[in-house]
Amino acid sequence: MPRDLESEKATLQGMAPLTKEGEGDSSSPPEHDMPLYRLPSTFLDERFRKMKELHPYCLLLNKDDLDDCDWLEHAAFDPQEAASREKIEYRLRTCGELCSGIYSSVPSSAKGKIGQLLSSRDFPRIDTTGTERKRVLLGHIIATKHSSHLVTDEAMDFPKDWRDKYELNPSSGTGHHEDGQTVCLHSLCVHPDFHDRGLGRVLLTAWTQRIRDSGIAQRVALICRERYIGFYENAGFTKIGESKCQYGGGGWYDMVMEFSDPGFDDSEY
Image (tube, rainbow, N blue to C red; front, side):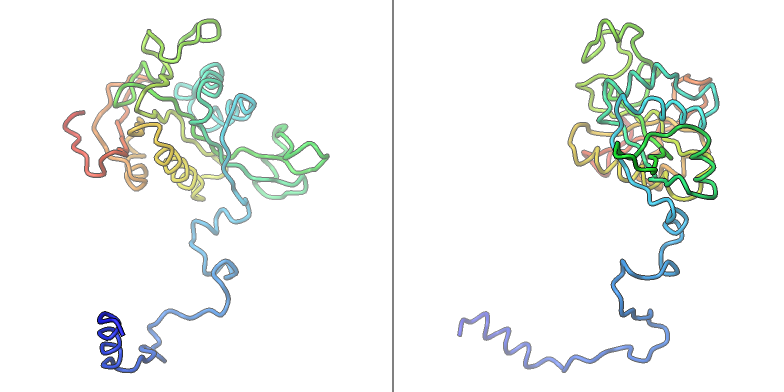
């Protein structure tokens, strides 16, 4: 027998018999005979129970989602903060691969808040086979890329002649820069009727992981109001300080999530 196997055999023979420690201990967590995915909702995390009836799922956005994104943007943000329809169209057409939506598949017979929302406007059908289910956009993330480490007024803007004179990296410095190493998160919003259900956290977590795994940038940057700093810090962002960006009247804070160095030094900002 090889020496390493002889050693392992001797070690095992010298060990005490295995026992079920804690057997009968009322402080131990209860054992369940069914797999986790079949556990009743009483064992589910509270945040997931709040969204259970919505059955949310995420998809990339594109130019065909313009009507839904424009509607949601103006339902979620104050007028001075909401992006214009043309700006949203520019971002969806130019870099839709950076944008994501969180949806719910809703039958025409739906009740409650989701049923009320369904009847408020014409949502697209799930498919073209005559189904009565509609695809309802509950939240979205819209983003671009830029060469700056932080979100700037130039990054928030867009070239007004983009339809006729599109540039991968606009010489004016405004808008999306294909070679930029910073993904600028311009809009993260959830419809007001579905706040406090964890939808924003699910969307943001899935989106940042996808951006990180894709290797297309070194960081994600955003600006937010002071009341949202804790939310983004819990999601892995670092507060840099007050932003110089004057979009929507100013008063923003810079937040950054670095991919290249988990313990980055923010002195360069």
